[in-house]
Image 1 (tube, rainbow, N blue to C red):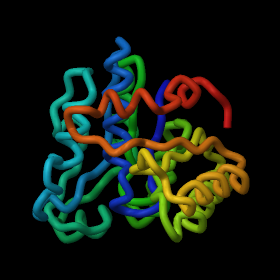
Image 2: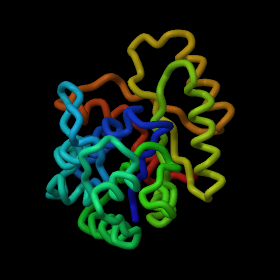
Image 3: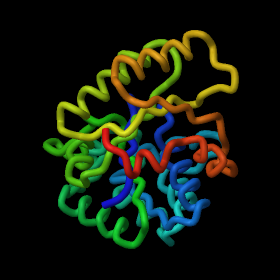
Image 4: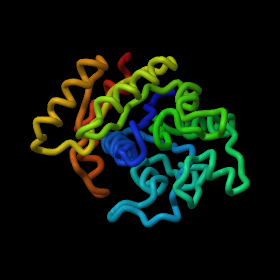
Length: 228
């Protein structure tokens, strides 16, 4: 399977925008790209201004003809961890079904962009974490990280957890990366690259209509073909 698995150092760190930018940029260069997200939660909450829910954003950025429901097979109102949201809703999330759905999406495209939920260790079910889905799909991981104070620890922990599990870390993306980064942001980027031994990119501030332009700034070819 050719593609990437986008995770984050935390919830709300920008991984949906990163995943959508990757989809849009791949589509803009002529590739058929599918998107997948195992679950979306928080649909009962007001969306961020200018941004639709994650599954709608990803379906619009990809070009494999998917519906939002096809991108995310599980959708919940409360802003909770998927395992708990499913429990409250009286539903179950079956790992084998998730993997099969992701593989089916990938089979209809040149590349798959899979976005996790929260961070790597968020449970999709009590015994199956986001990390486990990434492992079952065999995709290289791209980590979305904040730019400011605290990001060094959060990012290094995420990279270490991924590698300890046997995942390949293709890169880290700090988002949103300003046109004129502050000294602390420059230092954070260089420190993460040095300590984690990983390429660190920046995703510029963007909006829904400029995702492809932002995604062009990302090393997509290296992520899709290169080793950790």
